[in-house]
Amino acid sequence: MAFYERDVDVMISADAVQAKVRELAAQITKDYAGKDVTLIGVMKGSVFFLVDLAKAVDLPVTIELMGVSSYHGGTETTGEVRITHDVSKPLHGRHLILVEDIVDTGLTMQFLLENLGARHPASIKVAALLEKPARAKVKIPIDYKGFVIEDKFVVGYGLDYGEKYRNLPFIGVMNAG
Picture (cartoon, rainbow, N blue to C red):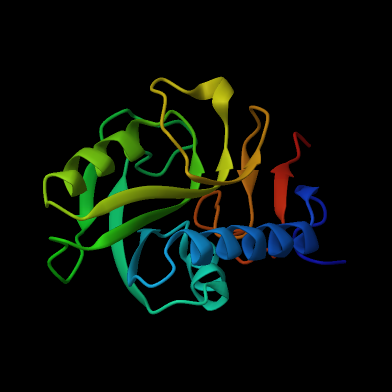
């Protein structure tokens, strides 16, 4: 028995996740034809999505990472967003795509869009693997959206519970048992 089988039920299969990543990458490749793109991964959750997306985009891609926190170890957001790790290069005049694992309340993404917008990029778009609209406190435009999910606590493909389960290749729901 795999380590997760008692704790996690599959919601979105690994194959479905990879197919969606390829679909989103093809759209980014089309939309940014002839341009350089900077993918900014929101740590730690987006790292799996970021890497797979970057490999599938057929353009010159630069990768940056930002660390932000609004959970502080729990399963419910505190609503207070803080930067824990900033990008390493100036963003002025660059085409940015913020890569996020999940847009939940929207507060973290709103904070990032405002913060990065103040750095005067050429453009900013959002790529999110998951959107959970039932929990939205602010409406975030997601330009490259993977899946819309119901209000369940999900893990896998970068999403964690207590820093565990990130390495699952699928999106799963934590069991009540």
